[in-house]
Length: 350
Ligand SMILES: NC(=O)c1ccc[n+]([C@@H]2O[C@H](COP(=O)([O-])OP(=O)(O)OC[C@H]3O[C@@H](n4cnc5c(N)ncnc54)[C@H](O)[C@@H]3O)[C@@H](O)[C@H]2O)c1
Image (cartoon, rainbow, N blue to C red; front, side, top):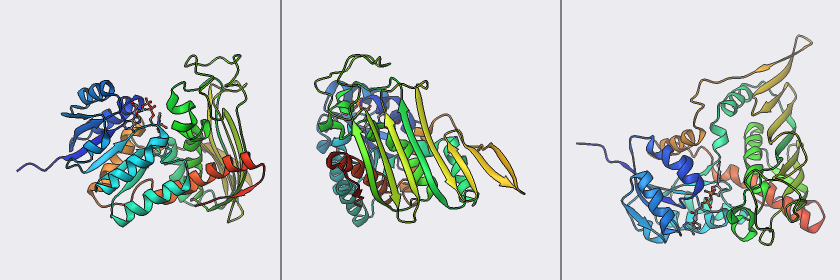
């Protein structure tokens, strides 16, 4: 008798789903991608052909009627919450792309529902599954950083504004580079810090270049009228243990690097930079430094993320990226935006 397949449905089957999620699911021999739902039937059909899925829907509520173990949600950010809640209501475990939601109220609603139904909910923070991240986490968990008392988080692009409406229209994305790429570096940094509780944030989010016409962009033109998010944001975060953090993210800026992703941690025993996984410390009164490596498959962090989700569902393990961590990440970004609008330091919800 053959073992039953792990039955998966895909909701939102555009860019990231086709590029890395479908190949990641197909890489797992125990998985069958049963169905695909996308508002665009052509997109759903194309993805279903890639995935070997027999059923296609334009309304994800029809997909959720099926007998599935889990769903993988890759819609634009603002469409995550209704889809995640409906999927959990229908009894499916959920993997959802980052940012899980753009407010702490939404993250909490999802998390409470998942917990009440004993279902797994995982945020798709694939950067945690890179070699540099695993090596860095292993080094930190070994006690080499000591207490993290300060951190710098950067997700700064020179000419990397994604023109799709799902990113630049506030009604679809809920935020600009902070929600797009800032969330990666912030999640990684918080994970390495051991997720201290953020308590207050002073921030500024502004549109510096994206309404104008002077800045080149590697992905071409975008709709200036519909652009309704920030293109630069910065924040200063205080944690309840006294630690602090500076956060910066941008899609367009005057800098030499095409993209700088950075989480730099300052600890009482050592320092660490991700994604390079470079550390500094003091040995017998002398400065020392080096690079960390870890022998994991470094080729496909998204595939590693999907395999970790599948493993947590099939083997009853905790979610590798639980909502209780994500709510602190989103709490910081939510407070940053509120601080920017109200012109004052604000308390982090969560
Ligand atoms: N982790 C990463 O590396 C990474 C990279 C890119 C995007 N993302 C995230 O993935 C998500 C999707 O981004 P993308 O680049 O694939 O966008 P995309 O626009 O290419 O694809 C989104 C798809 O969702 C569909 N959709 C929209 N609303 C829907 C709904 N209510 N029901 C069903 N389908 C719906 C759209 O028709 C589209 O095909 C975003 O949350 C984004 O932040 C993550």
